[in-house]
Amino acid sequence: MQKLSYLFILVLLMSLGYANSEKIQENARDFLEQYTQQYQKLYYNAAKAEWKSNTFIVEGDTATAAATQRANEALANFTGSRENIEKAKRFLEHREQLSDLQIKQLELILYEAANNPQTVPELVKKRIKAENEQNTKLYGYDFKIEGKSVTTNEIDSILKASSELEQRLDAWQTSKAVGKVLKDGLTQLQNLRNKTVQALGYSDYFSYQVSDFGMETPDMLAICRRFVKEIWPLYRQLHTYARYELAKKYGIDEVPDYLPAHWLPNRWGQDWNAMITVEGFDLDGALNDKSAQWVMKQGEQFYKSIGFELLPQSFWEKSSLYPLPPEADYKKNNHASAWHLDLDDDVRCLMSVVPNADWYETVHHELGHIYYYISYTNPNVPLLLRRGANRAYHEAVGSLLGLAAMQKPFLVAIELIPASAETNQIQLLLKQALNYIVFIPWGAGVMTEFEHELYAKELPEEQFNQRWWELKKEYQGIVPPNDRGEEYCDAASKTHINNDAAQYYDYALSYIQLFQMHDHIAREILQQDPRSTNYYGSREAGEFLRGILEEGASVDWRTLLREKIGEELSAKAMLNYFSPLMEYLKEANKGREHTL
Ligand SMILES: [Zn+2]
Picture 1 (cartoon, rainbow, N blue to C red):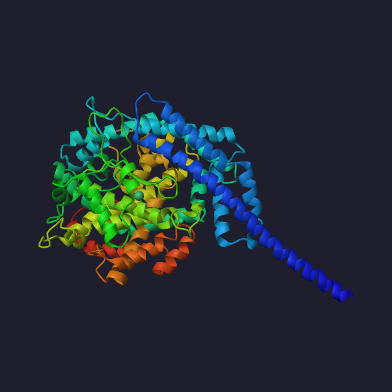
Picture 2: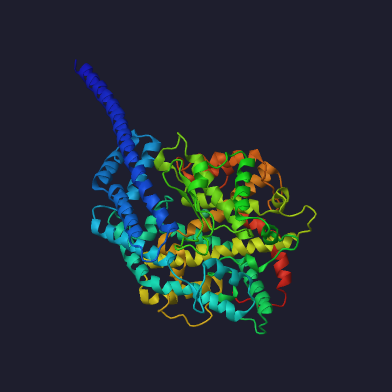
């Protein structure tokens, strides 16, 4: 009898447990459904308001900024609400009874909540206000050279092309002037961003951002430092090469030990590729007689050629793709970006496309984001997981397709350069290294270390500029052209420092991942030399990409890398790609003094 009753109780308990588990799954499903519905509505409203704030900037208009602020607040109130935090936490206490997808969504809800916890509503409100004010100052800033307003495109053109050092210095100083007006805002944001995430248990904003990779700060810093170390021998050669070649170009006899910032063809010295014009590879020249519209359509045609659909009509209607006419009485943000406004079918690009090589590459890059959005917008990926496998994947995919579109066989296939053109392969490789390799000490070095110190070590504002230039010198071998005291805030001249905080290593990681993917596509799918591929028209390459894109964040990013490419995160593919360059640079730098 006793035995029986034990058995009875056991069966009863088991069935209760079973029913309980089903019940929990069902309750979680209901909660996630309701959450998702409300989230999408508020997210869409906020994205639309942000869109207007970025594409229609009118001096003296405070209404747009206020509307954006209200929409962001409504979203923040919801994602950070006590109720959502408590419910997500409670469901996660029973994680063994939930599906993997449910767990991923609930964890994401908590991650989102930490940015806006309504346990500290005043703090969140202040932070959002400070962020909006910072954006308005940044994008509404009137850059002036000798009293005349200039666009950032015009500044970039001077830095890329001019050999007059005085003109270059003017342009460079103009580009940094915006930092001064952003310094106070950055100091405020440093404090507010940290305090906000601390309310949900993160130590600081940097570690909060890192947690999105399922990692902790020391691991992320170690990875970034390892990448810098791995590419350092090549960077050192590039640095010496640039010092001597640029001194020659500017007619300076005494080659400086470090690169003066205004010598380089980029406002931050993050990309030096404009130093090199590859013979037989004059893409700027070839695009000169094309229109900006042609560049856009060409990008779309490429994606179609590898098996993706044409862009939806709404993309063309709603995007902001070209520079504003000079008579326009408003401004727009000139920084290229791709948007997924409703996490469903409203995808748009914000660009200022003109027909040149940079924008040609940028168009292929941004459309990579757009096709990523479109691919993971499918019934297998819950709306909350419609994002890159990690934040770096999105950039990796964009940059991969930008790189692919710049390779000679690709450009020959779309008749931008003639097949008969004799291109100097080593010059081409040098040009690419001046972009991809040069970026690593900047992205994984300066930006990552600075933002780590800014948030995790609460760098005092009276050291912002000093520390910035110490890091610039240490990691990039770049020095300012004149004294840059603390009245400047040169770090804040970089968009991301203001509005994409503490996640810049994403770009460095994305370059690493991009070469891993590219190496795989070149060798395994196209069976071509990775330095000379043509993706155009390859359905197989498209198929492989789609396999990665359509998963979104519904799988773990490490697993995805392992399953699709068979590797862990590694700079090996990147270094292999550039390996022929080392010998060439050693030869070119013979008799030159290295200072790094
Ligand atoms: Zn991008």
